[in-house]
Length: 127
Image (cartoon, rainbow, N blue to C red; front, side, top):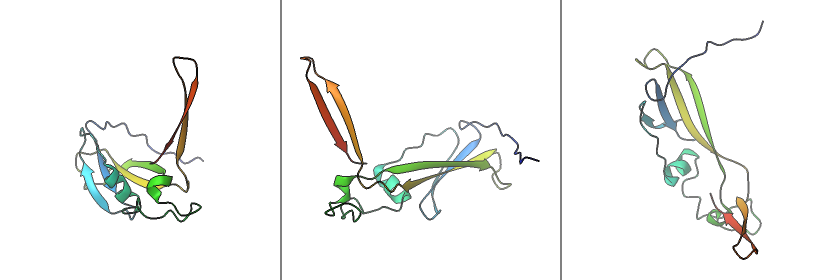
């Protein structure tokens, strides 16, 4: 027999509370249903356990350049579950967390066609 779970239908506008947690699972703040979630770069660094690391050497990169130059790649994780009894009026609760990936350099290339027909390659580094 296959495992089956009850499907829950809920709306982030009315029923779903979002809990923002740090890398240790500690609650940083709670966002009530219907509210927008705003995260600053400092929030994301704190959530990933990377506070203060932007201006420190990236030990994984050759020559140990500072992380602000090599960049960091983050994964935003959303885990939604059925609400507990103490979550009165809530059908579901979502936990929002951030993890740093193992990527050493974060880089994006974009090629553009200029009006005169030449091509320009742009390289972006960072978070």
